[in-house]
Length: 263
Image (tube, rainbow, N blue to C red):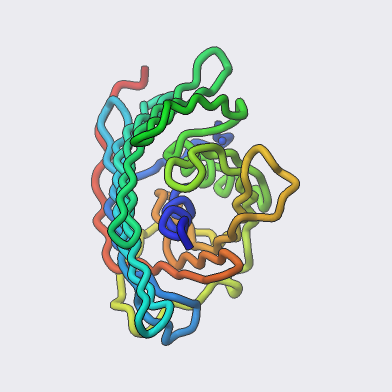
């Protein structure tokens, strides 16, 4: 349960793309529920805010949950991410704040791809700096979303990706992506208010998330989602083996992309 918040966020964020995707800056709000049933109880909210200028991307995520484990014991979890990713996708700086039942943990880090090597330096309060050498194909969060969409546009029905994760591992996730049939996608809940989704192509996908260094281990969690070709996600179903959390789009603001020189 300790990493539940980070798992939800990592799922919403999905290595170089063979088709050029056109991610669109946007702000998306989600309702979180415990379980996949139509009447599953609501346990919180998540916000993903992706902004862009000619220097790169600004990624903000904010999630809050409260889960009643028993009549007298509630688990309150919150997480915030503030990250900046270069236009080239070769650098990522971030800070996270995670709170569990009032206990706060703050982490700052930077990830850099240089001369074919990907290095991360992670600073957590009260701990010495952690230097991590990541597998060479590891991509930054926004570049990984771009790759996901690009591969789906190229009609790849199954493919892997390596993504740096700031909120759960502080390391690389191996993500195995498989396109599903449309009927396998979880239905939208009638209790949720309707949201006008992007007028764009979309794909239902199933993803398994495993630690990028121990690729023979069992998945840490799985995710089903509907992926739009501008990077917006909806109808997420996150299964950790112990608990299932769903995230449904409640509000969406699409923003124009900046006009930037090609070079």
